[in-house]
Image 1 (cartoon, rainbow, N blue to C red):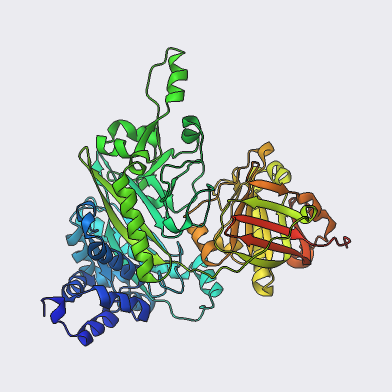
Image 2: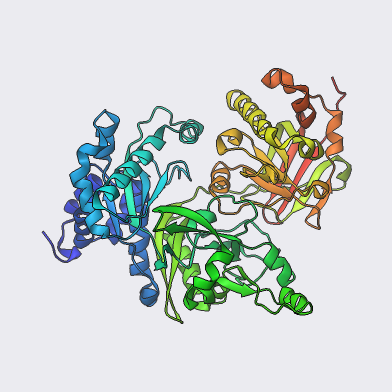
Length: 591
């Protein structure tokens, strides 16, 4: 039965939606509003296996449909993403012991559909990307180059599907379900398989730019940013670097009300805090790999270079004085930022999605570039974000001597006042002096403290030098979300003597997880954003490390301190003023 959506009975649409897409009444309401008979039929024509297609697939289909319906004037700037859907029925059979290779013939249809183009196998579980929980980065996504002999490509696809299914059992996912009181709820996994946006450049394949966007941006890295306008986080190449913390690399952050506003005062600073490596699909090696930007520039088409690259004229002038005449490029997506049509389109899209979801949303996208002037956007994901009602908060005046810190413009989700039971402080100098190979031990101890907080449901503030969650211990403390999920507040602390910088990773999966959990994630910098920071006042409070987590080595006791501040510490967050203050309202005698 095909035809105009208006000819389709509402009951038939409803049956199709709940059988094939979702049982969430809020998502179903939007689907039934925007989808017609042909839309449902197209999904069924590109679907393998019984069951529903899962939350990520629903969000992806909705964002494409809303782009088509709500912003038709941008139709020539939007490129649909060829996709295939695998229902939860296959996961249930694999979980119950049936080998995934039993479904080989059904997966061959997927190879036929993508016809040699690279694709990505993504999770799309029942719980994922819904109103209640987003599961940011909890499940696997696996790229398939889709090159070579057909049977080899099929084997790679089956292995990728198996990896995504197995990720339901990983520690991060189980911790997340426990955090949101869903440990016993049965999780079922669909798959969303999408063609990788981009084009072939020699033996490599990648889009010009990829990134994520949020419809509401309360993270004021500049004073005049309007939170309601939304934000983008963009990188050259595959979007993997836009949602994970990468040492030495910096994505381009864009406030959509002041797109060209920049944190850095000179072109040299912009270059220093720019992207140096690019993730691509290597078609010859049949894998995703990371290339230095300098390796890619000569082979980049002009359409890519125009959107991605900027020249460091200061460095060029300095080199020319030495007789070295050459162009120095760096990647900051400036060409895309300067495109008013792109900025206006993304701003309107995000606001339209927020209005339809009735709460803030985030999206993932890629920018394709063909020719000297044309570009198009491919949307690959959309999900609602948790939002809380801000409380009225009044920060006490004239008690500066009681402030542990007073900072502004560093990550603020909403206003609130929160009592703290403990403050965990990692001594930056002691951490710096600790042997490099042992630095992950500090993260393991933080994980033990997190486990205690999980069981006790007490609140703690974590103060760590440099980046939290980095994979490079020389930049900060390497932890996973599961190691910090039960902290009530987390601050990255700059410490110039050892080269530690507080670099909040706006838009990364860890950042989104902390936002969703309503955890304050801020920075204590060595600049005008920090009015007060006095960690020495913590020494007036009892240290309780062994009491909470048991015996640890003297070396680690020297690095990590837990101070009991119950009935003494209050964290004040004032979103309107972009200000965060931790006050210790009384002094205790150390036990």
